[in-house]
Image (cartoon, rainbow over all chains, first blue to last red; front, side, top):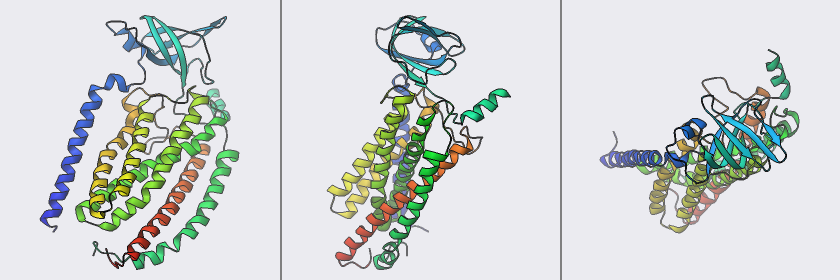
Amino acid sequence: MYGRKVKLRFLFILLIILILILTTFLILKSLEENVVFFQSPSEIKALTEIKKKKIRVGGMVKKDSISVVSKEVKFIITDFKNEINVVYSGVIPNLFEEGKGVVAEGYLKDKNYFLATKILAKHDENYMPPEVKAAMEEK
Amino acid sequence: MFKFFEPNKIFSITSKAPKYVLVLFIIILTIGLTEALILSPQDYKQSHSVRIMYVHVPAAWISLGIFSTITFLSVVGYIFKIQNFFLISKSLAPSGLVFNIVALVTGSIWGKPTWGTWWAWDARITSMLILVLFYILYLVAWRIYENNDKASKITTIITILGIINVPIIKYSVDWWNTLHQPASINILSKSSIHISMLFPLLIMTAAFALFSLLIFLMKYNTELIKIKNKGLDRL
């Protein structure tokens, strides 16, 4: 139905796309460690050595774990399998709360102790008015 | 039949369309903004800062949608040698770039009160930044190559390179740990955004789409006039 040239151009484009997908996949695969924004407490536990580089740890703020001593905030990040203690002093984002997502940036002292220099709050994909949230909690 | 089109015939329609699109855009935008800024509820967690979403998310959607459309038209245009598709692509790109920048800027404004940072090198933000670069590259290519045939080939290559990025933007939040949360709107399963917030979001998306259409028509008309001035009555 179509001419030979049309078919050739079609195959050429197809080849470019396939090679590009493969290349991108391989690049992303090899860079995976750097593409992730943060590591979970379980991934920290699995580390073989503790580097002095700045890293990010993310997960949920454990319920009833936040304690404020003078200017220092202490809390526990959990992924429900492993936990890590975090110490931080500085500005806390509005959405930082127990039972919600958090990303802490800083340095590992050891596998259980993290010295944060910056705290970012993560929020989930749920959006709803306060009344709906209240009604859901009643149930 | 596909290969040739008469600029005069198309122009007689597209030159009249902008004023109607403009009126419709103003109406939809008024409804959308009233819904988004006044009538819609605040979020249980983010309170009023959630209203930034009604600009941020539609802008991101439109920029992704336009890039996908440009790629599709360029590839089909390249395979079947349809010049008109390249003109459409070229005219669509500027509004895609503008909305891409809007998405990045509003994201930054939204990030400060919620996450606590203006900028983070998270996979989604970085890949959106890469999309801006591809939009710029695409538009620059049209500027520097005066030969239309050459320009259409080069821009097609640019769109193919850039399109690989689009699924990465979409699925970055599922593939890697990111600061962005996973998608709230799912076609196949229940959305995790309340209907009272979904409605203004969709209206604002329609408003932005109309704005893109308006800018597109104006750019496209300019392209048609250029062709007419060259004394060609068919491409």
